[in-house]
Length: 101
Ligand SMILES: [Zn+2]
Ligand SMILES: [Zn+2]
Image (cartoon, rainbow, N blue to C red; front, side):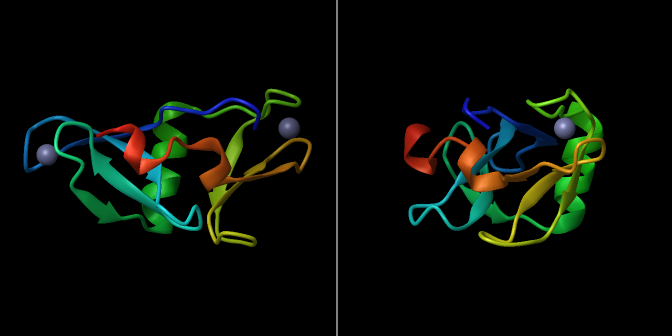
C-alpha cells in the first residue's frame, strides 16, 4: 500500500464514545485499536481484522480485488488479495499512534 489508510474499526470507544481506528505502535511491528479522542488502546485480534475488512470492504490497490484478513509475516498482521494474491503488511498501511495525539 502506498497511501496511509484511516481505518475505523466500526466500534465506538467505551472511554469517550468516539471513533476507534487502527494505528501502528511505536516500533511499527504491532497494531492496536485506538480511541481518536484520548488515544487509549486495545489489542487487535484476527477476528477484529476480519470484521473490519468486511465492514470497510477493503480493496486491493493492484487489482481492486477483495482483501481478506489473516496472520502472517513480517508483522503478524496482513491482508491478502482474494484475486491477485498480493499481500499487504498491515502496519505499513496505518498511521502511527503518535499521529493521533
Ligand atoms: Zn477515549
Ligand atoms: Zn489484488
